[in-house]
Image 1 (cartoon, rainbow, N blue to C red):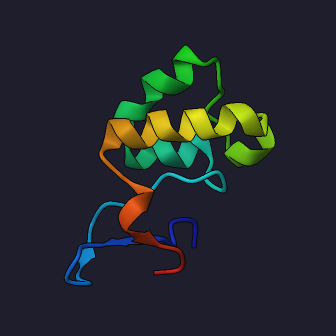
Image 2: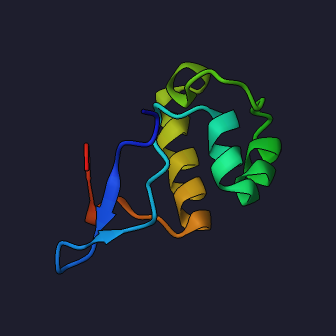
Length: 83
């Protein structure tokens, strides 16, 4: 499954927001978070099914992921990989 990471609050209860990650495709991200389309457009990133990690250099990727996650209100601070 593409979105396998879940966020948890301090009481260890699942929260609905997921974190946008490098193994996700721009197309899938925009399908879930429509508001991210403008960021992809701004950075001239096509809405393909290829993973972000294959489309973008690693130094630019972390900046892009921070920008996307800031927009949708997700944070890696409270997220656990694999759920």
